[in-house]
Length: 434
Image (tube, rainbow, N blue to C red):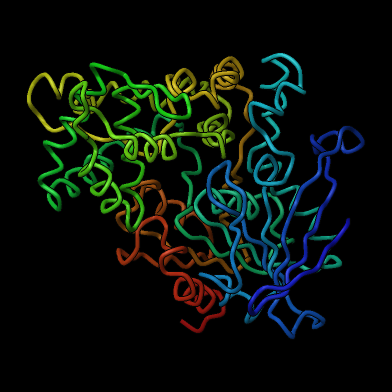
């Protein structure tokens, strides 16, 4: 482990790197390097403090790059030495993308490599890192979204490593197939779209106009992304964030400009959409997204795409032809994205192999969760577009001693939007103060 220490306002930061097995079932085999940033309150860097490890949402996103004591970090360092871990394949930890994956070989070898990037491997990484940084003492895990899925696996597989678990918007279904997840998701997305149009009724026609243009022209965005109607609809992923409806409205209101060749999508619109739709910064999200629901049995087999066919209101071409509103879609990955996105095109075959895979091991031990003794608090966002509330509450009831905080004050990004207040509430719950 190497370490470099530096300062920002209110915190002392240390870059830390760890070597862990690629395959924890073969501990003497290939090893990969993981990166984490340690944060401690300025003036307390030499104190003995309990540890809190943060697991980011995704899958496929590295830990937050905070400036000083931004957001929830300022509250966390009041009590903890914090480890902001880039989970394997994200950020600076064994980066996975179209540039690095060819080092593994052909598509089959790439797909096999990617089977080692789920919650089970992430938790085993955490256990090796914990023993190194805490000297064996248990630590607290803070899991946001997919990080919460990892925290539930942690409770299932290595609860002895945990002093407490804090979960925000991340209680997974324990035994549901991906199809169950998306059958619950599409109606939630429809409600979010209807709520957006109720707030911004002018966007009904704007979305239809843009959709009709895209359907006719399929423009190529500045980064080489081929903008199809389905791709345009996928901007609805924003609607699950606290400011997402406003962002979508501002994007739609200035989409067109007049040119010598006629009415066209503006450069500014194309640039914003390119940034919103590209997976260049987080391709692992697209590659393994549905596999986080794989637990043996049937393959995920592009579940979101298949299940979408059960909800004809999301058929954009039919909506445009019938004069109805164009429904945006939400958090889902589809095979056509591997044709549209230049960051994903080279990974298309590996993605199809993962979608066909059936040998995913189970992630959750329901008997162990039912006997849980680790203090757990979970924020469940009542109108969460990304994680089904009923699924989350069913899981909350299945984990002994878990204290849920059900609120509609925040969207899925409550930890970002609510920051210190959300974390303070969860800490009070596991300590019995709330």
